[in-house]
Image (cartoon, rainbow, N blue to C red):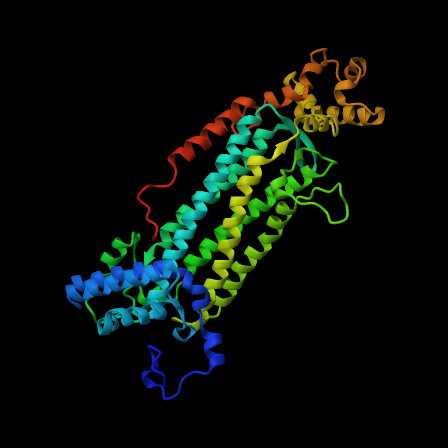
Length: 470
């Protein structure tokens, strides 16, 4: 035996090079080094408070862990596949620095509860970063909405013209989606930050540990209730990944609107140069590649979630090596989501809107038909009857190649003598949007209330007492 493994006492021969390559995780789980060292330092301090190691030993271990952290940050730390993972790489280097006392670091814990702690801290830090990025995007959408309260465009249902809406309300719809996402992350984080340290391998430990003090030092919300569950649980990662999948779905919907609006058939937006590309053969092209890629990467995030769900579905209690497959999926998802959120904020900040194209599109599709029905209903006609009368007006306008607002008064009075000259102001598209002041509606006052709600939400921000591992 080479003596390099921290678990090789019962083995008479070392693993093959192929096995080492297949089982190693240090090539990616080194991303958890901050969380691993923070957890180890909290564990050492607890061991000293409990009299399991001396104060001098604890100080020596913490000094060594700080030295390892410094080496990693400066890039001089040598990561070794032979040490398998981030935990054993750090512990091995620590022992080289501080000597035999380094071998006391692992007292009262297992890699099973250690990795569960590290991963929970890492996931929590990333979830909080996602929340910050979401709030930046919400702020951008809210600001752009404030600039476009009076900008009107066709609102669609079934991808067909429906009613005039303000561009502000359209943008705010996404802002409120992303607010739900941010709130969902905050709620998930409460469950993510539960400390498993002290569960050891699966059955607990005979050492008189104090898991609560470790949890408190690390800013956790509590400790495990069952040691077997503590080391085998990855619900916290799945919940975070599900939240990420929802965020990407919302981003994809936003991108789909932008892709449609950028098409000259709509022409509602001018893509910013910084967030679009050209064609290698067609000089006129300005492609919404960023939005298309974001739409496509949504499937990648879904895949990461489904991969981990599939990994976990057949695992017996308790820890199984299959759980090593959790981190690569999460790390890939994290990179995709974080970059997507940053790009979405920049793209929306620089997006050029074309109000004249939006207004011109209002005249196609009879978007004021409901206003005619509402006009008749306000004069005592039952709505279902008014709806049928308005439908007749649409059919006539379509036959004549006119808008409803262009039909002669004599013809309109033919479907109901209740129609007067004041029908024409009632059919104005701007008025159609302006009168919809019901809660959440597209009227200017309602939109301003929505903006106020979001700005108040953004001012509150994330709670100041939430710690990140540094």
